[in-house]
View 1 (tube, helix red, strand yellow):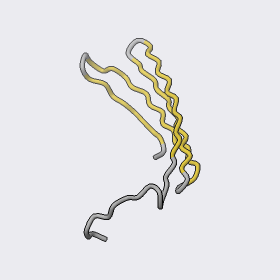
View 2 (tube, helix red, strand yellow; view 1 turned 90 degrees about the horizontal axis):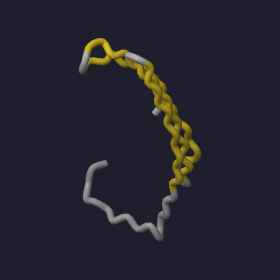
View 3 (tube, rainbow, N blue to C red; view 1 turned 60 degrees about the vertical axis):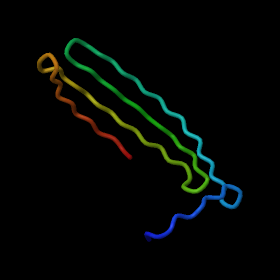
View 4 (cartoon, rainbow, N blue to C red; view 1 turned 90 degrees about the vertical axis):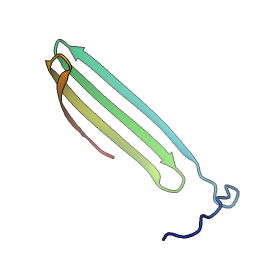
Length: 72
């Protein structure tokens, strides 16, 4: 609902979020490859892991076709 802004008081509703991520990138001639993973531990939303992979092909100088897939 839209309405007046409410003040957030961390003493009444503490939040904790710890995240760690890793990324790997590799280039081979006109190709580039990438993979990443992230894990978050949040006291309100729990443990969540997301990932992403991608591959790119340099068609011409300044132009690259990219295919990517991952979670959010």
